[in-house]
Image (tube, rainbow, N blue to C red; front, side, top):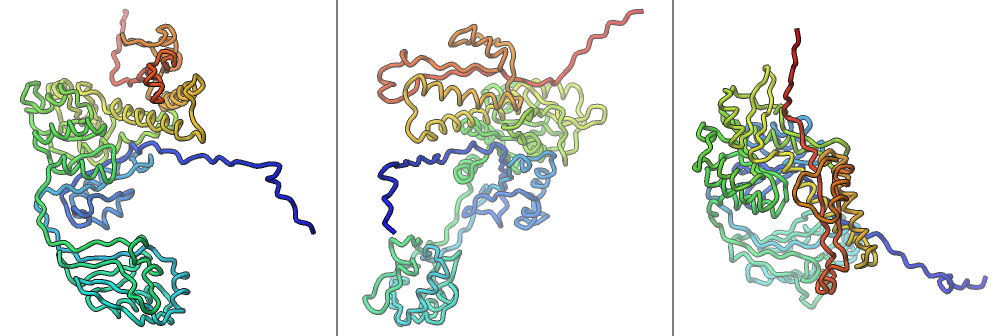
Length: 501
């Protein structure tokens, strides 16, 4: 049969695949900072948990962290049911002794069947490696009977004198038998004789192997709470946090500023009548005056610090892609916390200063929320909305396989994406149609008021023709302004009864 002419001579297809897009942040992640070691240390700053049994395994049922984790998982609903999780985070409250380490050469992962088949043909394998400054020349390595990666490591280990070879996660790991700064290794090199195996075993420089030299034992100084938060946040991002250990007032001011700057939420519990007073020395009032609404503050006569975690776990359960899923903390019950008894004077003072309290009404446990430092749901909802706007707008730019033109069509595409994101938050119950009462207006005022009253939001893109030429040359879109109407929540009802005889 004659060869067919390739169809590409007539039709050529260019395939443009959808690019990988960014994901919205998980806003239902809560970190609890503990100074308990064991599973956690400076070398392992955090662990993620989605069930209490794993916490029991890692920390034990008598640990302080386990007691707090029980509060987290006891709430219904809880963040795990909304794709969230609990982060165990380490705070180095006291000096920590770090043992000396050994030098280690960790090769890249190997495909067992492939490398075993290759090495079964080798009876004269060779490689050189320096161990603690002395070159060890490994020759005559016989792999003809090996069946597993462990067998391969055993052949190498037998030939070594100052180090040990093992298998770690499908990789060959060579560790010096000494510790400290004099514990040294090199990548393996070719001695020039026999069958060199450095690249086959992926232990040579450039093969993906990782070399770490030994270190001396050190004593690490205690760290501040804000240092701990910053470190863990950089390694394992979370959206809210609290400390098991009670912060002092100076630390509270620092943590409040840190939470606000990083757009995350911090929760804290205050005990003592002085925190109910409106005066310049009360840190609660100072945080309120500073507008640091991301610092959520609770009052507890019994010093129940689990109250803060229970509240976070109860409220960070919103799926913002759902319908009518938005939440409020007012009148919620916190499983595992026993309400305190409060006088009306204490309730009023807490309300005025910015402290939420957990008490009872008609013998029913309820959380009474204060508006003085804003409401938790307002802070939480806006964190989620801003993140969604950033990610969804980024994905419009990233998602184009060609480009988003700097034309009206391009601007319309951006506006459509922003409206879709905002409509999702209307569906969730965060925003809602209503009257625009702010003195701030933009775009066409009539359109703004009509859009907000009918949809709950208004998106206005400034005209391309009005933008500076320098912005156009730098490919910057004209500003897009958004007005949203908060749906709020009903926390109190006034009834008027007209009685007629």
